[in-house]
Image (cartoon, rainbow, N blue to C red; front, side):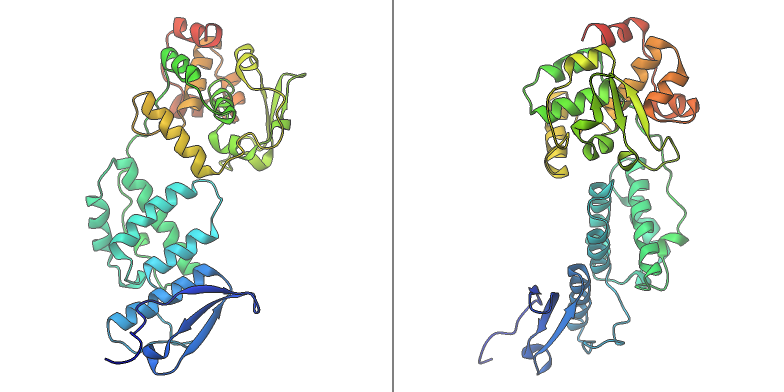
Length: 336
């Protein structure tokens, strides 16, 4: 074939003049060059994914409004993730949906049979908790797609949720905490460790907070409403600074407590986990450690629940605290 080679893939670029994303379809695709603009990059990639699927299957290209009846799973995933960028749990959801795209990326949601979805979930490697998390992320994607009329049905609503399993409640030993504090690390990592292990804050809360939330004169930490996870607990709280916290936390700093991207932060946490013998950082290990040692030391579930931001002591016993010897609790609060 003479002339320029056929363009294999469509690309998205920013059109500064129109302030929109542009996809140019070359003449080699349809016999005449055409262009299409989009409000978001995710929508542009979604459109491209469907066009390339049509081209691969030798179907007529639906280049105009009203002809696009199908939406590829890969395109929907990209658009969905671009909308929720920066929200809590984004990294985990993206990881879950990457698995969906790898298996069913070229298909539309409507083409996925519930039984095929069930068997795919059953065969996924990992723990029961991991498979349950993948299912929840995929079901949320399907409901989002239906809400915005990108799909007529959600196959994950027809599937029985997999067994959730029991969430591991990993806590650090006194020796592990002492080793962790001795490892050279950035100031923000030290702050994360101390705020989690000796004040009970969630990592997501710390990521959203600034240093001016710490009042060293009153010895209180203000956890504002915009930092708290919306789970039915306290909408705002003040946490007491215990002596070990005051001794270990960095001072005289301004701005965000963790001034780096979430990716950088999680990468550093993983490196610390490896040094302690874990493959990755145990989920909420610092907060679980706080709950366990705090309850063992003061034997007051109400006080522990208040520090954690819970409105019920049942949450402390059922989901957070593990059995800890009184002597170990004494070391945690007085010898570290």
